[in-house]
Image (cartoon, rainbow, N blue to C red):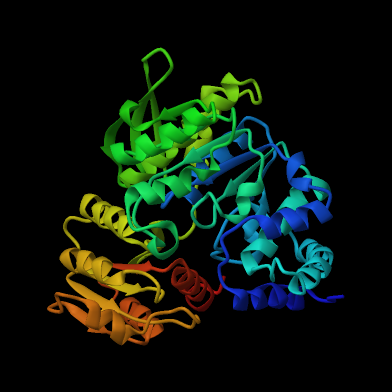
Length: 435
């Protein structure tokens, strides 16, 4: 029996020692013991290399505007652990976490002694979410974000009413494969028999893989990209048009920055249309308009300060860095750019550093307090171009200096691992704004 919330979270994090174990057998075993709560959920399942969280928050806000209550399961967390399991954007409370852990822990202890092996941290949290949404606090819809890949991800035991795949790029290649086709195959593993799929995947080789799997499972598949038209780059946010089912243009605006967010918002629109088409939801165009405008996803090109201008963005793979750099080019053409970057040690960070170096006037690499964090020296040594590259192991000092300089001709950008962005965001809000 675990008696406190802090002990419960510590026990969950203690499962990190069991690493990453792709596969569904342990999940199936635990859920069977729990009475298969995952079968009681109107789930929407989202996979992809980048954009899952943003797509999820666009769709959640649309559904909320239409009057529905929406649960979400996301990873990793940025502000507090509880946000991984949320209802209408509000993290569940500490007592819920404690109660869930005390139900799941005996099952984990039993699994520890079985041939199936010990459940991982992610498997534990996923099981907690299924128990919560399937038995304790049922919602109209629950949106599940895949943790890694799709086919063998712990969330893939879910029986969804709709699936979505954002984009596909090179990430976790040691697990998912070294080619786009292999990675697409893993992502497409979330496709279920007779369940529709919406996707913004653009590469033909990946579309072919996805379409073949969808056809084999009698799943209707729609690709969104061809109907999107960018209207303008706003000072804050974006505006765009997307064709309706009759080929007419619908005009939308979002507050989140970056052309990639137009893609994510469009995917959410298509998902909303599909839910309405299948009569599992009733969503009007005004719900979509208002939901998109309300959507906000912390740690994604988020402005934390105006003077100095400080922006954080969890660009943690090469595709994420590419969209990050594109947004900088579109939004900040005049300002001097000082960038701080940190990564975990299992990423191919050399390509990311070289890409950032091309746009930065000054690029600093750092490390942070995390067991998988790469050393700043290793980041530096991996770079091809070191002309504007600095080692700075004191990221907090770097931020304090930005406030001391208070230079309105400079934009300070902090990017890399989401774990790093989480630390940075909490520190800035707590130390500098006393929030």
